[in-house]
Length: 307
Ligand code: PPS
Image 1 (cartoon, helix red, strand yellow):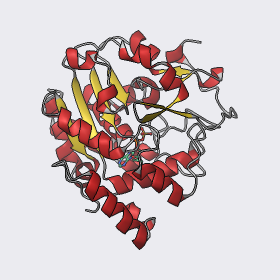
Image 2 (cartoon, protein in one colour):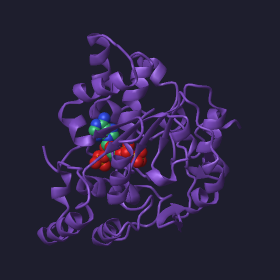
Image 3 (spheres, rainbow, N blue to C red):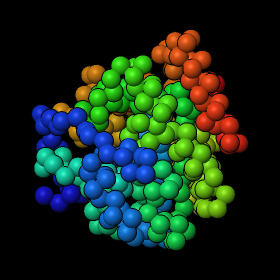
């Protein structure tokens, strides 16, 4: 079955919890680790757009906004396939079982230009051709506390990821960078530095929540797209949390049945800023802040944890 035409035949398929292997201090899944060589040789094209994020920072939201802009606000065109297949998830690889097979690399290689590609890679692991080709990159960052909460729930519902352990244990792993794709702190800082040298639009989830129209306009400008107010409002509406939560092409209910259990926690969970307050105890918050201060002392990056 062609990868890009694969029907959703994954229901009832179960997978063992993912195993983690470290590469240069960055925990990766085994299949990602074993394709690193190929990944490094990936041939980016000059008109590729890369959407890069730390996992759970607002990737899917940004992908939908970008696609809506590229399709001039045509909702039907944006529903041509799931997010997972419209935009190759570059490093993601599931060799088996066959019903879940996926190779972001193969999907990207087979895709005609212009391509929009998703990655969670830290900046130092991005295939060099993206820099050589001077590709445009949109990076989205989300404050560490909400990012952590979202990541914790995602591990609970996604059986393809390692066991999260308790909330307390997961928080510890997050703080020490022992989670998939590594340290949040290094990720956001690494990309922040890279934006001084490359064509990177660095966005914040919190800004997108506060004023989505303004952030959509920033993306439009970056993509050199001039769309009228009517189209802009259509994009705003169709990329709202409420609409995307009900959109099967964006809410991950069509993929990974038996792997992602939305009854444990939906992919489109809360979509809010400040939800961390419902999870952090006072003691945990103090510990997190103290550690955060140390790890973020060498950057000008500033995050908002509430609006
Ligand atoms: S992934 O798996 O890494 O691609 O996940 P990602 O898409 O980066 O992040 C998922 C979180 O983003 C929230 N989300 C949104 N928030 C606001 N508005 C819109 N439209 C939107 N779409 C997705 C989603 O709910 C996850 O956050 P939490 O906090 O868990 O709800």
